[in-house]
Image (cartoon, rainbow, N blue to C red; front, side, top):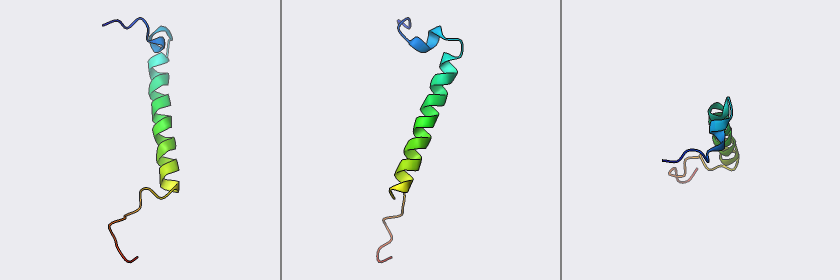
Length: 47
């Protein structure tokens, strides 16, 4: 495989920064979806 074109491999802490960035995106999505009510239990009827 050719990994030369992956920019995070040329930085000292590139791999860690990419992992932190992915974690922040996941937390932001969780916050945004929870705020919009996507995680409420829709199986309970009549409440």
